[in-house]
Image 1 (tube, helix red, strand yellow):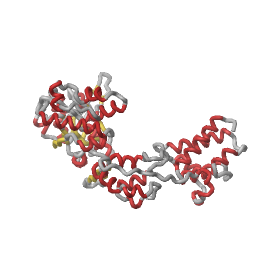
Image 2 (tube, rainbow, N blue to C red):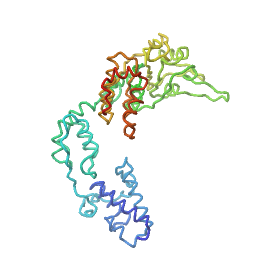
Image 3 (cartoon, rainbow, N blue to C red):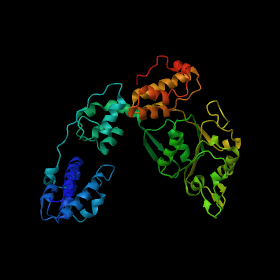
Image 4 (cartoon, rainbow, N blue to C red):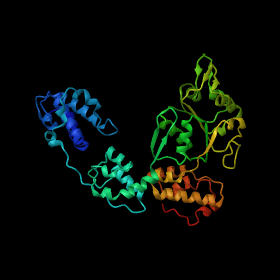
Length: 430
């Protein structure tokens, strides 16, 4: 070939097709046959044919390359459907004609996991981090594992995977949770994956369109929980923080006559999950403009009265129970009792099991949680939130010295005496 770009594209296409599996290989061969009017099945033959110009070859390889990585790094053949339309049903039936690009099955050896490393063993299986870098676990295999149907999985993982069934089941029982929400007049919603221990209750409350105040310590994932409610219910997510005037809630008409619509107005009129974050840091007089809307299902905006959309879900978050400032949260304001009464209140604490599951550095998260327990036991007025866990994990991964990471994420704000009280052995072995 004369075209260097075409040569590189060809090598990439062959490599990608080999890694993609037999089905993708057959589809690739079918595509080549299609664009050459039945002349070739194999990429190698197509590439070596001098009667086909480099420009035509390069265009074909580019389409192949795009298809191979279009679906999150996996083949997506939607882009090639048009090229395959009209072919007979035999086009997938002859694997022999793609022998030259078919990769042999890889025998994967999985080391037996340590009894205290179940989560790592599960991650190894699900993420395909095996002894052979070319080995991959496909989506169907992962779904079968998660659904407890390991016996139905046909894979190249071998008998070692079946022997890990109990380990996988134990790890899944701790880390993966299914939530099914049923709302009258609507289809059931199923949510799979890692979730805060209170997420199921929050989701069920939100699905009934109950106004919910989620209160709990900083860093416990309240905002993230509200975002996940929107994702689970397939609704838009709208957000604002603390406010000091009702205009930031209801909007206003500017000097040019243009209506300014903030997050609350959009969710109220068109539907979606609206999060009023850190509501206890807002001015009480500004928040009072919320009261009529929450109880009457109609709200007066600068331009007109608007009824609440059937899919408008309102969630507020706070670090207090709206009773005013505390030792830890001195910037919080006491809110009107009539406002507080319009919400069902849900406590959202730190879910340490979820924290352990999300942190890949197990020694680090164990250290942070040990210090947190010691802080509570000593009655110290300092905060060791999950942010210490996840910030520290990133800093350690970046190669920063462990002592420095501890100082800036966990020990921050503590006096020498306080630190000695919670970490008397000066344990920095993480």
